[in-house]
Length: 246
Image 1: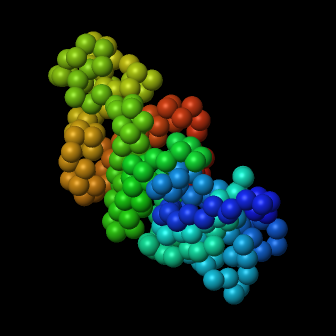
Image 2: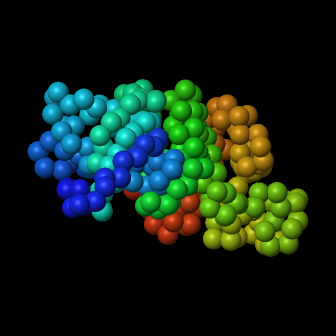
């Protein structure tokens, strides 16, 4: 990739999370990043597949890095990369890496190229840090539910979405975006315990929810959050279903 003829090269710095990588030629990689100030960025990291690469190990999926890049027409070029958080522990355990990859895929699907979304960037960075520190059963489901909230599709968890009744909530109407009562039951059933966890996650008690041990209720939240996010994205999350088959 060459610089524009006769024009000044645009050099910039940013922070980002590596979402995915692809091989390019014999020694390079294309790195897709969710950055704080430039949205989703695709950039070439030259020579990173060589054993003597200066920063190849710093540009692995889940890594949180400080970068310097040249801006190109289609692909930028990474010239510097310094580790903020390596998250090597996420890549050492298959199941935990699988959960991290589901968050990377979801963020990748929601992020737009060259459109800054600093809140999405911060949410992803924080979620990966949390997963690295404590691999609780609700870390990923909570991230998915918070993504829906960020996108303006906050699930209705305090009352029936059809009539506003707050008692006898028994079902989760995925397409309609929230809980339903007995009279307006629609969608899969949901337990009172799972409703309580939904309210903790979306009602300012996230820390308490992330400390909950695995249970049938956390499994409910896991499946419901995936279904809700996939409905919003209008596509399946491949990494989620790969993980569940493993």
